[in-house]
Length: 362
Image 1 (cartoon, rainbow, N blue to C red):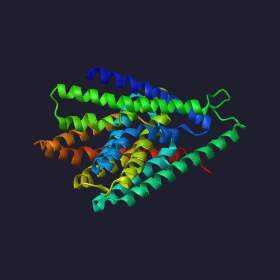
Image 2: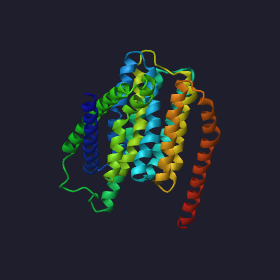
Image 3: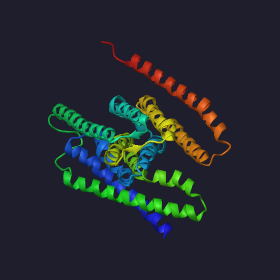
Image 4: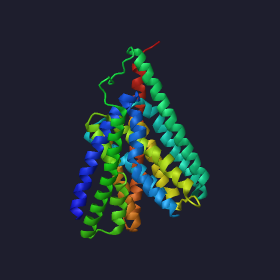
C-alpha cells in the first residue's frame, strides 16, 4: 500500500505540474500578462496551497505556532533546495523585475516578520497588515504587467508576440491550471504518506521524518512545478514560482493564519533567534546570486544545495543535542558562511563594474 501511494503520488505530481505549467504559460499569452507575473501569482500561490491548508488548520485549532515553522521552513527550502535543484538541471535566466522589485520585497517582508515577532507573537493586526500587503502586491503586479504588455502590442502594431487568434481560450487554460493544482496537492499528500510509511518500516525516528520528509512535503508542488517549467523552457515561471511562493507564504499563509488565530501566532525564542534570521539571510543571498549575470549557474546551484544540506544537518544535530553540534556550528558560522558572503560580494562587484564599462555613453 505504501509503495502504491508513493508511485501514485509521484505520477500525480509530474502530470499535475505538466498541466499547471502548460496552462499557466498559455494563460499568460491569452490574457496579455507576462509569464513572470503568472509565475509570481497564479502558479506560486497555487503551489503554496498545502502550506496554506496546514497553517490555517493549525491556527484554527489554536496551535498556530506550527504555521511559523511551516512558513519559515518552506521559504528556506524553496530558495536553497528548489532553486538549487532546478538550476542544477537547467541554468536559470533571471528576469530583471525579480532583482529590482520582487526579491527586495521578499527581503523586506522577511525582516518585517522578525520585527512583528519581537513581542513574541504575530498579532491579528500584524496578520491583517500582511494580507493587505498581499492584495496590494497582486494588484500592482497585474497592473504593471498589463501596462507593459500594452506597450509591446503598440510596438508590434497590435500583435502581441506569442499570442494569436488560434490560442486556446482562457477558460480552457484556467481549467488546466486548476486541474494541475488538484493533482499536485493530491500527489504531494500521497507521496508524503508513502514516504513516511517507508521511513517507519526502515526504523527511522519520528523526529528525522518530521524534519525531512514532512517538512519538505508541503513544498513538493513547488519542486516539481519549477523543475518541469525549467525543462519546458518556461524559466520565468520556474524562478517566479520560487520567489512568488515565498512572498505568498509570508503575506498569505502567515497573514491569514495570524488573522484567524484566536490569540495570534506565538513565536518561540528559537524561531526568533535562529530560524527567522536564517530565512532573512537566505532572502538576502538571493540578491547577489540572481544579480550576477542574470543567470543562476550550476556552481551557484551547488552552493544553495550545500547550504540546505548543512541547515538540515544542523536541525537534526540540534534536535538530538549531538556532541558534534558545537564544532559543526563553529565551522559554519566562522568559516563557510563568511567565505560564501565574500565570494558572492566579489562576484556582484565585478558584475557591476562590467555592466558600468559596457553601458553606452550618452
